Length: 130
Image (cartoon, rainbow, N blue to C red; front, side):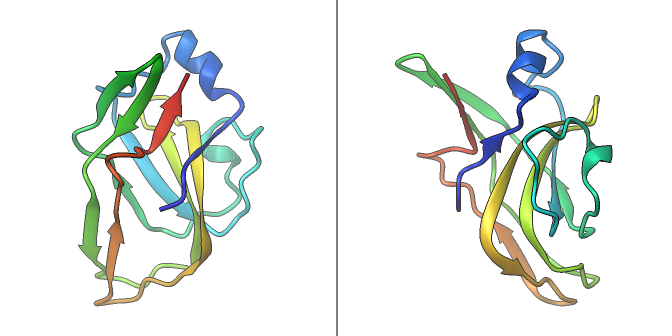
């Protein structure tokens, strides 16, 4: 999985205490719209593809001053067909503030009965903060 790129406002929102990466609900939403690092909230995303899921069991670890966010893998078998997507966007649910996005490098098509797996490399993590 490609790494997540932080949106411009993320660090400020984290410093202000508006986001708690370990305890707050974080959602991952899919889109085919190329992310703009200046986007701030979920409403800034022009279109979403319908596929979304919450991160579960978020963990923060620190090594040499770098904090890493990890969570459990997510998998499902689609019960509906979703619009094609290439990007995943991490959203802070309580505020709808955007955290980061990931370019999957190719369009993903998830149709009825097809499995979808979001595999998180625990060694790399979802996001690093230094």
